[in-house]
Length: 238
Image (cartoon, rainbow, N blue to C red; front, top):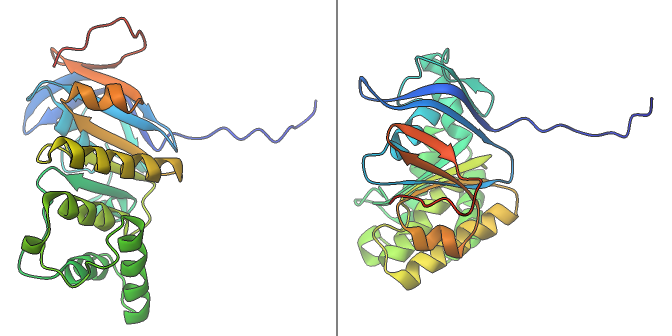
């Protein structure tokens, strides 16, 4: 028997038979989902279909009470409160409404996140902020206030923030929802570039044109289920 050095990758995010909650109510039953390193995955469906509840379960904001679930090596059913910050350092999250702190500069927004996640050395903090801003094409915007930036620029800063701790995966919850079509395309191109560099992307959207133009794996949420679309002939209800 020869060993050809085949490495079997473990999923970054795994659900099997998982019931997904929104508050105390089950919104999705029996979720099966594996997100592998380097995947680009869409979670699509109508408003209220449970898409965002999946994201909140991955980050341990929502509890997982039934079925299997894990994210970046953490068991989502048994994770301790003290371990949740470490889980969230492994995952970057990008929101529709940017969620930048409006009372401080771009640089100060990013520094706040780094210090909150354990960074202490000024030189390393400054270097990392420069790196992520350059990565999203915002290298000259460090001293701007959020209100001085366009919507697309604010979303680029939000993506830079998500990159700070070198996450294995980025969860993007309707990241283009507040942007015009041209700016949305720029943000999708940026996410695609990050994906090509090895970061897994999980994107929630109800915009069909996005996942038709930028192909990836698609999970469709409908009538309390969320299943992977493997047949291109299946109509996705949005």
